[in-house]
Amino acid sequence: GSGRWRVVIRYVALPLIFLFLFIMESVFLFFVPSYGQINDYMIVPHFLFISFVFSAMYYQRNTTLIYAFIFGAIFDIFYTSLLGVYAYLFPLTVYLVCKVMQPLYKKLAIIFVFTLTGIIFIEFLVFGIQSAVGKSSIGIEEFMYNRLWPTLVINIVFLLLFSYGLKKIFVKFYKIED
Image (cartoon, rainbow, N blue to C red; front, top):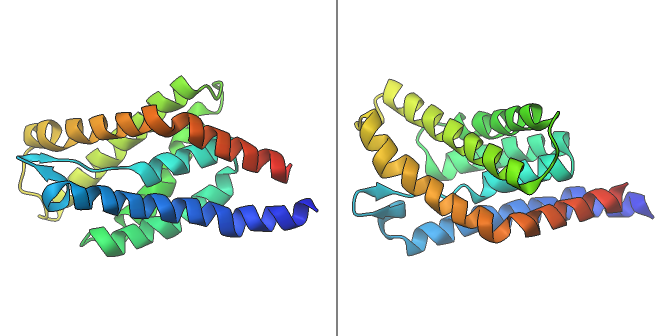
């Protein structure tokens, strides 16, 4: 029955999608020299975060927030020297994006814009935290030019290529559970 599918989706399919995108971020960075650096540009894929937003919007927000915390903690362990930053930023940002989007229609174009806004929010907070604890030596202009813009470009490309597919997957999950 639907109870069995609910378990399969929630505890197998959903974490596998998130794990796949977590790994794809690593693979992407493997092909971009020196941890996403091309010349002075720092490119940060946010494929996992994007999938959290789509899951929260089209599937289930609360379940997604739990996975956002878990994968944020894993992200912290693998990629940052500050534990807890992404563990709290991922679910917080997904929650805020969902709250702002709640009165609006779940159109792809609107989610696209708010997802990018969430990425900007995360990037600025991470930059601010790193600057505050002395882990970043660059100024705001260099951050915006060398990290924020290239990061937005690669994530816009990802959204253009995969947002429709992500929406379809999470709508299907919702319908199977409903």
